Image (cartoon, rainbow, N blue to C red; front, side, top):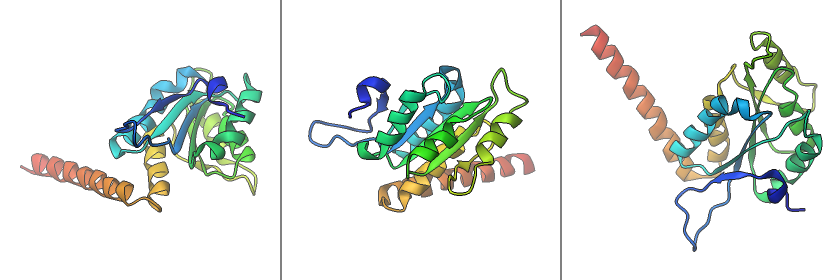
Length: 183
């Protein structure tokens, strides 16, 4: 079953042409479009690292059938890692993890109906044995994107090189800040 039409997936293709179209390997999903302002950080860092991704809304509570079909079809579509962001009860990452063998990285989102984000953090973090979800800090979608790229880098030297350059740039920024403050 092709879930692309049902899911209305937005795909970010990296440097594609008619000869070499690369398939997204990371899926970024969120429980609501209102989470996009947080989840966009994952997309931005993946773009910076040269990693193809797809991004869409999949609600565990409002569209459970869509969540089931999306999670079950992800591996067959070439997805290698799923980044799932959710606020409030935040069931999306855990439910998706229960439906696929792929690694799932959960991003707890501090939403308007949240208890300072703790409800989201604990919901994603406290998964039962056998259904792991790697959990990043509250609203830390950028770290989720970096972690997803690091997972892919175990089999992709281009991503390795991009991650090394990215982290070297972080180091340079800190060193420049230190020099600036120290005079």
